[in-house]
Structures are given as structure tokens and as C-alpha cells.
Length: 171
Image 1 (tube, one colour):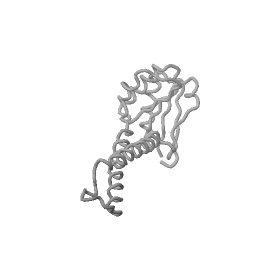
Image 2 (cartoon, rainbow, N blue to C red; image 1 turned 90 degrees about the horizontal axis):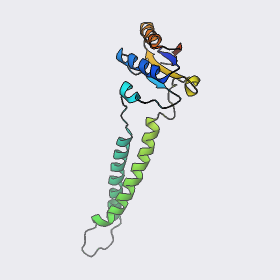
Image 3 (cartoon, rainbow, N blue to C red; image 1 turned 60 degrees about the vertical axis):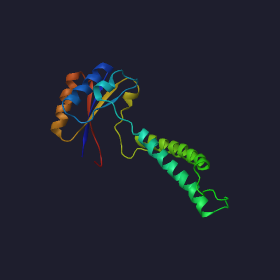
């Protein structure tokens, strides 16, 4: 059962400094909850790479290939007299290829957005109501009591007003 060390701060600068100290101390992924946007979070915690563009790319590739195969397969299955011209011609098939490229790219983008924003929540995430009003919360996952004590000492040294131990059930 994993525990989370949570520290509540009054000022955003102290919360950001505490998150930086936790990351520097070797904790894997400190998390910062804030009621307002904080300048400089990416420099301290690192910038998260978005996977949405990959969803869009592969969805568009899938849509383009399936659009062309749909048009070509229909032309091969239902052969009309073409007067000596080829049955599979590129220019008329580009219309359906383009349309399905756009459609599947958009649908994959929406799917990628929902997956990357973790909606619906598959597992319970740490939430503190005070962090939505007037406090800044820094949380970090601790594997054992020793790592919790280290995280607690770092949070206290950074100026946390309150430190809580939250346990995750089912981990």
C-alpha cells in the first residue's frame, strides 16, 4: 500500500521550491495542485510531453489508408464498364481519402485528449479541497515509511503549513 506525503503551502513560491527539492532528492514525480496558474512550473518539474499529436497522426494515417481502400475495394467489387481506362484511378479516390483522413484524425484527437487527461479516472487521484480555494499543495508518492519521513522533512524545511499522510487503497 503506497502512501502520499502532502504538504499545504500558503505561497506559490514556497510550494514550487518544495516540489523542486523533492524532485532533486530523488522522488519520482512530485505533483503540484494550485488554485491559480504558477509561472515556472515547467522549469522546476519538467515539461510533460503530449501524446495527443501521435493519436492525431496515426488516426489520420488509418483514415487515409482506409478511405483509399474503401474506394478501391468498392471499384473492384462493383466493376463498371470504363471503356479501357483503369478501374482504380487515383484522382476520384482522393476525395474520400481526404475526407476519411480528416474524420479519423479528429476522432483520434478527441480519443487521445480523453486518454491523456485520464478521463474517466481509472484510479483514485489525490485531491485536497483547500488547493482549489486558497492553498498550494505538493504531493509525492512514498513507498515506505522512510521515504515518507524524508519527504516530510523536505516539506517542513520548505515551509509547509500542514503535512498529511494519505494512503492509497488497492495499490
